[in-house]
Image 1: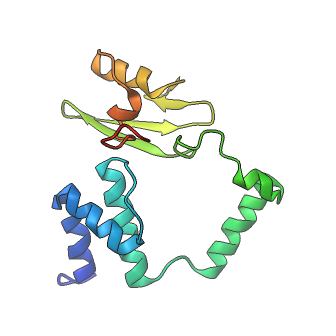
Image 2: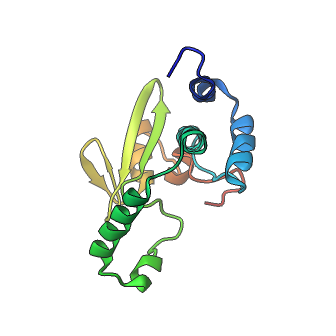
Length: 151
């Protein structure tokens, strides 16, 4: 990338773009309503999409490899692919980020719940309580509910 790379400048600008403007970009780039996830999620997905549109997406061989890996996991059973045990729960491996009093906290979604600081938790609310010392709705604390309380 050169010093005058418009893509690099656009990516750098995401950090200082107001959230409503990020949501407008989401609508333009994805042609869907933005998800009610936290700002970091919007920034990272927008950054990926901007680069994907500018430089191209995954190579066909990469897509085939990912499909093959998926088939190894589910045995090629298309019914298993459509099952989501909790439609509102982020997919396994998702990292949730939250700054609290100047400290960044990273929670990973696991098969059985969540992991924070190397410890398993059954709920996000338990993690939010451990972080803040007060009762919180974990979904709200980690930005997984929109302003109307829906996930």
